[in-house]
Length: 625
Picture 1 (cartoon, helix red, strand yellow):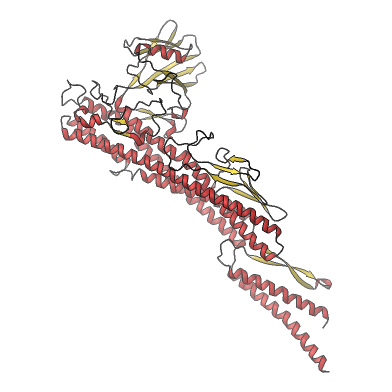
Picture 2: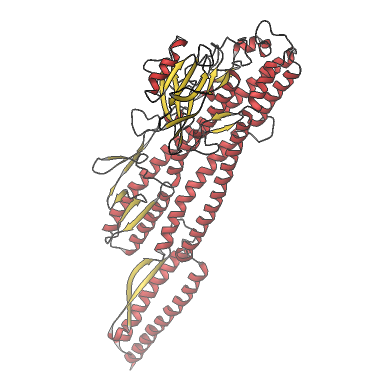
């Protein structure tokens, strides 16, 4: 037996022993989170490559499977949070059809009005209307408060998730340093496992992709292309949370106008980037939190604000509709705007010579210059918004509108309607634009106390508790619509004088059904225009329906959105489970496979040991000769 054979056997023993150690380590870490199966690479050596030597310890995994796992992890975090919050939001409205749900409370109110119409001189019936109205206002307010509570909770979650993500970025950079400085294979693969686990956890917060460099470090970027980690350098993420949020708190790229927190990335060089403004985060729990706080929940608030506004103004306003008018120089409409209040918008439908239609919305204001109007607060986001100052003298109404519209229109007061607040609006006969129609919703009472105004309209709902004030949709001092769902209340003047639900004036008989029937029809059959921002019926055009139907549409929309979110989350959970299974198929430890390897290695170890035993016996024999 040659010395070469002995060396080969010794090398085989050493290599086999090391391989057995790797297998034992794999078996010991079955089920350990983040552990990737190890393998030992060997190299041939000796004369004719007859021997073997230790190579490197490698991790067994598929790079594409790992990328897919991170992608699905990010998606699952996004859909999971969306489904969870939407489910909580849907529960705020109650179980559809039950008496305590929003639609049930609305139906109870309309039923109370219907009952009053059948017995207008009944004091209990009048009290029941006030009680049902109060219950409805309370229900709308409680749902709106729940919406803002969800926004506040989301704001807090964004803060926590941002802090956790920032910590992971720092850990990845530190692991990069250790990996680049480590030459021991066993220590390096353990560090690589830790770094991959940190990257997998990071992908739950935001969408990331990692690129491995030659020195073993990784560069981490968002899918939008922003670098978060470059070898030993990591960006720091911070969130300037604002605590409790209200309906008026919204995101703005202008820090002076922003009422909610934003995620800021600070680069190692000291530069800062607003990740929300730059749309750098597109998946993960952070993206879901941003969308919920700034889009989903504000839209739910807007739906409730629109419902509260429609509920109030359907009972207190009359619909003014223009009648066609023409002269030798132009054509247009006459419209009675008597009693026009700040916020009682006038909508003018226009058509140009190419057949394109658009709306022009005149918004009266008591301020001079008139209050600015945020386009998102208008019913039609595509309309041209024209604010104008509403003079105290009704005779000046035409002149105020004329000044706001400019020379393209001819506006005169006291048109064919023959009333103090009547105006005629015309466009030139040879002009490129024609007026298709004019409409407005005009509040009939002067004050909240004006409940016997001689008209069927009554300010049953007002803005705020105590005395309250009329809701007219004013923009003076800010949008009156924003947060109205939290402030809507029954008019104390009506609650104190329930006979006003029937008596339009002192001469109205106690059994007159005119006002009760009007109020019931105003809610159930009369159509109102609700803003496009509510998302009901689309996001680019206003939606026209009755107040009662709009209530049902809100519940249907929220239920459908919740079902869709849950369906997407279920699908994403399946995709994540598939990705995990695929990754585990190559990287996970399988006991049967490892035990089979162990048996083979033990056989090889025994064979190498027998060579050494034979050599020892031969030497003993030679020494005894």
